Amino acid sequence: MSSDVLKITAENFEAEVVKSQIPVLIEFSAPWCASCRSLNSLIDEIRPAYEGEIKFASVDVDDEEELREKHGVLSVPTIELYKNGDMLDKKTGELPRKQLTDFIEKALF
Image 1 (cartoon, rainbow, N blue to C red):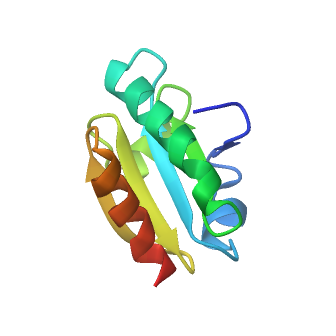
Image 2: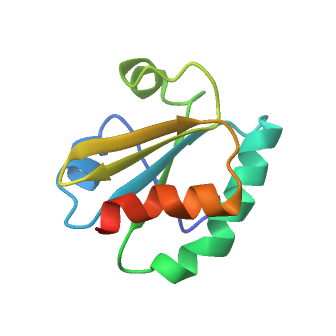
Image 3: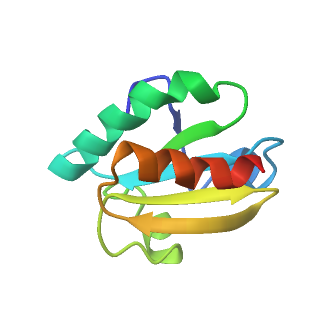
């Protein structure tokens, strides 16, 4: 994801995700993951359409082992969608645009 996407750590997870006033999409990824780079590009393309409605964030699984383990992330990319501090849904793997936008819109309604 681009540099303006919020980086989630074990230290800021509660403040940035659990206590967020708007839904949060977190991508668990790694720099070496080709599927992650592809999903990152797609998220960067659609993100402007959701500005102010969804917070986009990422977790580097190599840097944040504690979060990776706590969330049961066994492969990357994995995305989680949160609303009001609760996880609404979780998907693993690369998603086509329509499936990703449908996933995101679950948090808006």
